[in-house]
Length: 99
Image 1 (cartoon, rainbow, N blue to C red):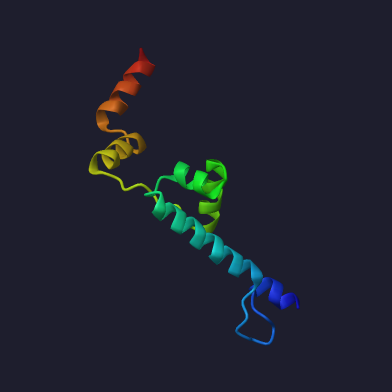
Image 2: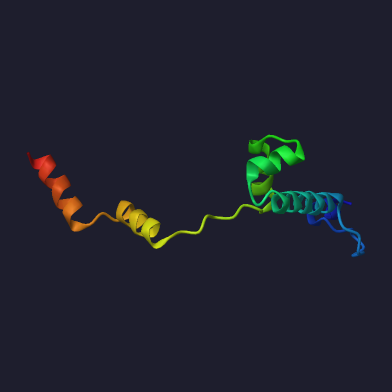
């Protein structure tokens, strides 16, 4: 019985699936369908499902439904500048310390 709790599968290797996985799959499908019907708008989806937007976000995070926003070349460049300052920023910061 303890093996079933860990793996989600019965000890005898049967085809039954643990209730947790069935519920997650059902919830994932409900949220995905509501998102599609709402055109991907999360606030409308939350209202359609009768839950708070923050609750929807947490459920989407837990169920692996969150998608990263596509990054444009400009956002990648700005992040790179923040992560790795160029020579001019380094020189300016050093000059500011020496003065």
